[in-house]
Length: 437
Image (cartoon, rainbow, N blue to C red; front, side):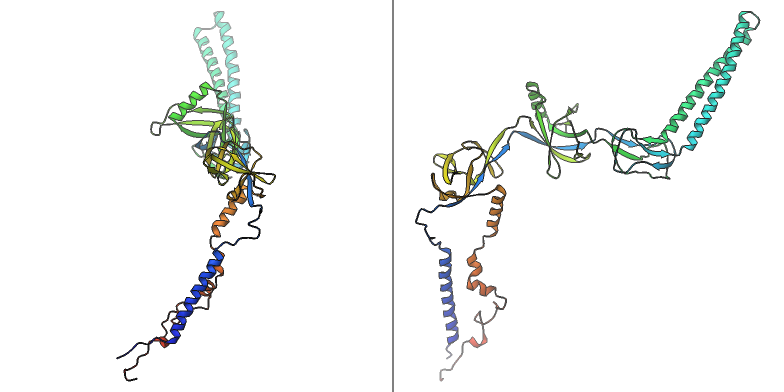
């Protein structure tokens, strides 16, 4: 018969492990149990953080997605054919109405003007001769010295000469117009884009685009409102001053432009698919922050602002009598009953009970009561937000980091899978003995 025998070494290790666990338990208990600081039983002044109140405009505003578009935009298209001789603008620059942008070869058109002038002079000379002959035949006809046929021929020649002069003048005008088209000028003031044709290229009087100019000041923002909102707005404008409108434009980077409508108009029908109607608002754009083709947020509300005080939510407490906050003045905590409004983010609207210069307790509220003398430190909303974020990151206790058992487990030279630590050493295998031993 074989009898299992546990080695003394294993018993000692298990006993040592139990003692270490007991010691760790007492260590954790001592660290986690709060100790009574010196002077706690005495009338010490509690430490609190205080924060000022914010003032904000809470007037009702409607928000819409707007599309920025140019009021005037022009594609520069040639009216004649020819080679581009010069490009006289800087791409992306601001051009004034009437500035010369392109010059197309002018020699052929100058020659055509000279030709038309010569044709006009020839026609005028023929007209002078025909007019003299007509007057002469007219006198002879009155005296019955010329036949009727001769007079009719002279009259016809005179009228044809007049028509030839008019035709020559029209041809000269067309030639001069074509010559004028060799200098392509800006039809509007605005920013010009990329030159789509450079010097030496042949252009024709077709749909070929040379460049594009867009007007940026003033500029238009288009957005759509529902049919219900449109009708409510129309009724409001009928009952109130229609100019009592303030608008804010929120740019894609978050910047806000406070601007007022210069003019606006609505589309002439409601979109039956979306039940909305388009509104086109014209804005000043002196700083050129509104770029045609961009999307912005448009907030529209009454021009009259409604400013109120905002208090941090962590400063508000409640008891059986209602809501209150603790205000610190001259180092003394004072309870204030407040009437609250709606919540805006992490702030609460205060309808009554506080003044603009009050400082409320945002941390340590549970330590004080009405009339308690406190040590107060002023903090800003940004500092308070940073503090809360840091508290979330520091949830790991110092006991976990400094405990000797945790330190030993995290030590790089300890093999937690060692057969010795797990009691699987070959030297610790139970020995066997026979009954006769």
